[in-house]
Image (cartoon, rainbow over all chains, first blue to last red; front, side, top):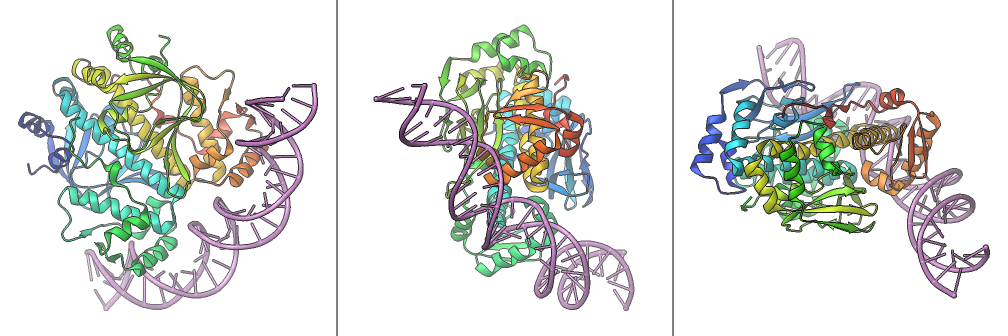
Length: 239
Length: 239
DNA sequence: CGCATTCTTGACTTACATCAAAAGTAGTGG
DNA sequence: CCACTACTTTTGATGTAAGTCAAGAATGCG
């Protein structure tokens, strides 16, 4: 149960021992990857998927003029390119924001899971559907929320997701992203991010020093962000 | 094979007769829904999924102040809330933009498919993963593309998707959305949409009269949009 | 210590929003 | 078939959130 993916899955539904073993058995090998490295390249044709065991990665699309849009952030236990199992050709890039420990899972073994473990298959499917729900929520931020509300929303999301895998202590967590990265997530310029982080700090709802964020007033922060955690599906259900 | 979902699946991988029958057998009943009606409400707990047989629907999130963000548009053959099969509680709303013919598919029958037809399960899974890819592409539009490029990108996407289910004749298709809807898709105001539709018309790459769009210069339109169709996975592969 | 990022702030510009109102289009019913 | 209403499209005038350019300060790293 050191495997954070198992923690993550067990947050959504009960897992049998057999299913836990099936997940462990799917892993072919473990690798370390340095910060800044590209884990998956857009256009690549893959025969394995990557499971993030520890670290932060970003799922992004890069435009011709060099600007980029980050579509989601991933943390311990996220099956970051489970997509490639059915997509075959990747439509986006995945980069490591920090040093990462990853597990390589051959598509052949995932196929076996779909043939033998329908319930586990549904839970993995759920994982990709939650990713889509996160994209939708980000779309709302970029399209309709103010810069300040978008930042607040991101902090609420990361707090809950990190909490779910045990990476929060006393309302405090590490978010190793630069303000340039934040701009690429929220569709904003660096300067505008900087000014709105400042405004958010001035509310006193959070303390944000370096890469450490501490939430001081969850109620008012989530109110400001109009945050509703439903999309993260953080409840145990028979699925 | 009247079922447009089967056309859509067959565009991505070969389907056996048994699988085709399994899809047909999953349908419990067919309903008609009037334009403007809400098909699925945010927060609803469902025990069936909806397959769109004919019509246009929008997947959207509604904010407190009444503004909304549309996260994707759906057409004939889209399994519009297959998500709910694993999510259980919906995080967004689905509205009918036109009159729609829909099929009701009980979750019980989908569960049976996951137990008996692993390959068909992977194809359905692929459907939800393509939805996520569409969200990502829209995120790029809203976050990083100009209003004009975003509009052009949307037209390219809808052209290819409608083409894939046989709803295009000679570069021409019907897109029954108002400029207010377009604003909600691209995170823009009605006025700004109107001005950019005008600019796009002036390029001569398209003709857009009422709800009918005709593409006159695909190369330059897709160039303007920086459109890459990879994300739609419109190729047959063993999945 | 020196170099490279990242953060911060100021000055100025621009894409897009808001407000307002006219003109076009479509559906309804008498 | 026309009159009525409701919605949609279009345009102008003006305001504002966010972008760009630039440069100094802080931070971190070899």
